[in-house]
Amino acid sequence: MSIQKLKYSAIILFILLAACRESTKTPEEQTITVQKDSVLPKTSPVLATDSVKISGEEPFVLTEENAIDFFFNYQKGLPTTKVKVTTSLGSFIVELYDNVPYHKANFIYLTKKGYFNNTMFHRVVKDFIIQGGNADNKETAQKRREIGRYLLPPDTRKGYKHHRGTISMPSSEMDNPHMLASPYEFFIVVTKPGSYHLDGNYTPFGRVIDGMDVVDLINQQPVDDGDWPSKNIYIRKAEIVK
Image (cartoon, rainbow, N blue to C red):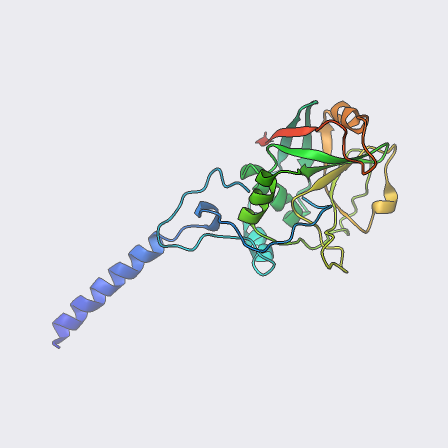
């Protein structure tokens, strides 16, 4: 082959490689698929509403192996964030802590994916907590399979305590000696002035800044023997607000 032909071939190869790099999409732009054989923790908590399917590419699913790297990159540049949670009993707003990056990023990610929409406050313990992000329906189970099966490391050394109004993340019931957090659920403390025996075991990642009366109203609802509300309390929508 002549030198001129070799140069021409090299140019064509360079163009093809550049085109491939430009067509590469981020994980959020990929369609999330169902992960088979996942086990859902009972006491922890997506539908990819903003995903675009890319022909010929493997769909992105969070796993134990990739979740930390994913959220490390996802949280870069995230602004101070507030999330409005609209329930069947009213709305409240939580502000997320900047220096609890993985838990903040996880909550924002699930909110943007629409995971919390149509889930429930499935555990209400009088004068203690309300816990949300789960539901006894196929839709919620499928959302979890589509997002993936993963846990988050605890982040309890930032000085935050479980004051009244604190939003925190429960640990998983999976084999979990290190109290890793179950990413799909959250709980809010209603105890006055707080539930400080939880400090060091669970990760506070934000606080209710508006609508605490709604949180109290949820906590006052009648429940059955398993702390499940007698009448379903729905999270209609969770959304990012300024």
